[in-house]
Image 1 (tube, one colour):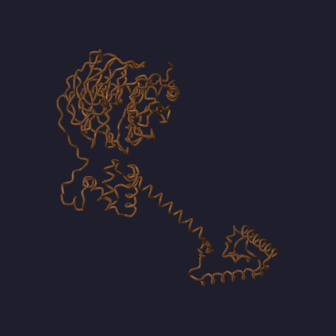
Image 2: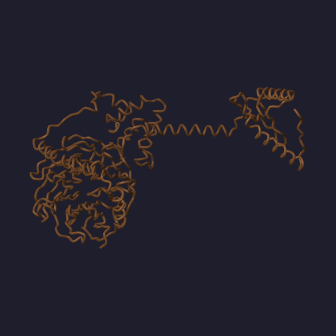
Image 3: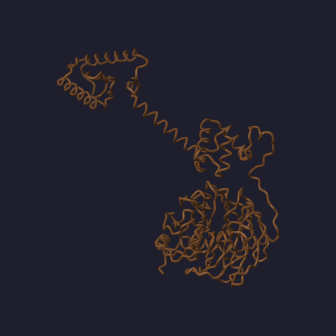
Length: 573
């Protein structure tokens, strides 16, 4: 191999070194396709040695002597490498053609970072596939059973749930499935949630396990059977009409649902406050608009319910009868339409554990008593013959409006039941509560057909869409979830507010939009098609406790803890 000249230090020598390095780089780039790889580099001021594999196409030399010299130099380099110190930072690996190349420290670090990223991705996928409790008490119990701190300083419920998910994923990845299953069984038995100290507490009492899939029935009264039959006869024709109408709209080429939705949403984006009034001396708790949109009912912590003419918000009647704060109010489906003013047009629920039926003249017609704890929301069944009440006694009940008889006492929630809604057909009911769970019930058979799990905090409100298969829920976790009952899963999660979502309501006629109310002092309008925000209704100085939408979707009413009633519309005054 030809000798290489090494120039002494100095301007001239440095220039020559630069030229030599440039020549080496150019040569390396030229023969890269032939598999030429750098073996090592000399110290500063020297030149690098290049190894060329024998028989390498365009890079091969016809001069056999020159080729033999290079082969000998390669062998010498291999012997030098084998004889190098074990602690040398230079490491080599073989390529596909048996060629050795050097792995730099940067490459090793990059490979380690890549492996860490892959492991993190696999752990994240494993964690997402695990079923984690949504109830905070159950999360704490599971953490305790896994011998983890049940809470950390400044940790919120959602953070605690994410930590539990990470712990479970790590146990699963480490192959400690037995420990994980034992922890799940302990949490399922309820011993961890009861705060038992000592690992052997759950082993002392061995009770026979009961399958969670076991079906049991509770005998109902003859009145309940007749009520279910009436609901069946009422719901089937309405469901057929709804489905037939949807099919005709879908098949009609002149129907453009997207254009109709865009028109409605554009109009709602112009919504503004048209009137305002002080509703009571105490904070307002609930409101409801009559089916014809002519009356507004508001309830307050004073125990009074007031009727107002809208949109002027002029008070007409005061309903007095409760001894505690009123928590819910609802109009009969035919109020201000086919019912006379003397008939039972409105119902109120209170913390005094009673619901009262009133006429529009302010007369108390009937009381519904039986709950063991205070009531929350109340709702009329679409038939108008039955009343539903939700209570903190962990049940919701169905009452006969005409006789005041309790037809159904429905259990199913582990904590207080707060909200209740009926599907427009009357076939389904939905309940929600402080156990972060919403349940869907078949009113014709009495079965719980769906348990909607996903919220990480209490679910305070829910409402059915007019299409019959979408259900919206509002929660303390600041979100509104839209569920598709056909797919039995959450369709979309709306990050609705920065505080508790106190109420959610669909536009009753076509379901073009839905409205949410929140403790962040605002209400918001959302598109029911793609769930994009349409308009924020701001103006209250306190928590917005309730919201309602008129049957034609023209008006929206909100009430707040600041005692104010606000009436909103996109129509110009």
